[in-house]
Length: 213
Length: 222
Image (cartoon, rainbow over all chains, first blue to last red; front, side):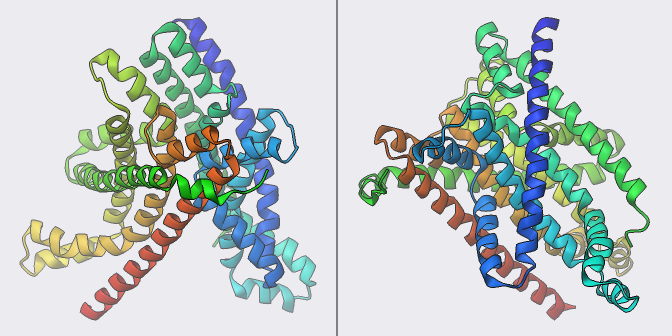
């Protein structure tokens, strides 16, 4: 195990980080739409959103990735495999994040919303000034957890041939015959990244905290 | 591409055997994970500081790294330290260890959530330490632990699909192989999605039933 091999793994880590970050961000946007749909109480919105969430939470991510990877060309959409991977991961994390957001919105205390209405805030203001900030604060820890899950799940995109930490480790392990040090180093890189994310989460939670109760 | 259910019907026995492997891996993984996880959590709670820190570090490593990397380490790295494993036992070990790490955290939270006053009260009433753990602490934990434990079971089912990558002949491997042999990707993915989804839904329902039962049992005894 040389420095050179480790550097290659570190370079691949940039790809892991990029894929994860884009997926989490895109997933978050889709999740907002999904959770708005599930909270709308109109069955034309609720039913499709529930189905979407149930499907993406109930089927393994690997199967979802294979689905998107094989189906997109079949229906005539030819995109690079990296796009397919990011779409798959975004849809999956969107389903999880939507459930978190829904939980957050539902646990905003009723009294606060009533108080906002009594104070004369319009429904729109109540939504953006009261419900959204409180719900986001309540779901923040879950979001950090989800980010860590996605960082780990991103190892699955190696299956569709995208070079990230896991794929790089696999290639290096088969060409150097050093699977133990290489996979252990890959594990270490994931561990360090996830620890940093968890640390940022704890720090942010503390600076956001207090007002949440 | 036309959806051809005939292919699914023709390959039903193969799909069944893949499903069986997945179910066995999953259930044995859960059972092993719960048992080892409980032991780990108990050792961490009652075994002193060194054991707590050592096991805690191990659990953090297992929870902080992708399951796929752990599987590769065991499957490709194992032979270098004299651990030649076939795909199925390798997958089973990897899944059990992974499950144990997560279950141990659930049990740890469960231990922490039982008010110490209850155990002290039991001891004051003359129950031995072991009796207090067995009669008071564990029953109280069960209710707290059940929802996250069911949740984890669902996650483990989905993680078991990852084992297809090291050629474990489980559901995902079997069905996607059928898909590429028969050029029936749509049918294959449809079968996979439906089966996994059905098991996940059923597990969730079962978990809620168990939760209701258990909470009724507790309030009846209280």
